[in-house]
Image (cartoon, rainbow, N blue to C red; front, side):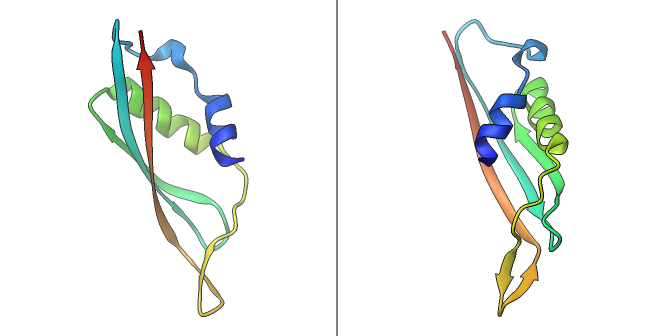
Length: 87
């Protein structure tokens, strides 16, 4: 559900698109104990691709189940690779 919501909100019109090839970024973020998403950072070579990935993740307001350690909710850091191919 998360990836589906992410891809539906991703706007490719603002990207600096290559004529062909692949755009790559890795998005790092944290799911807090209340289920919200914070500390979002995308790292990749194409700045417009990074900014759009960060914008989309910041726009998601859904609360997610936090990770648990010893049955206590904890902040959990996640990494999501993102690739887009152009022909």
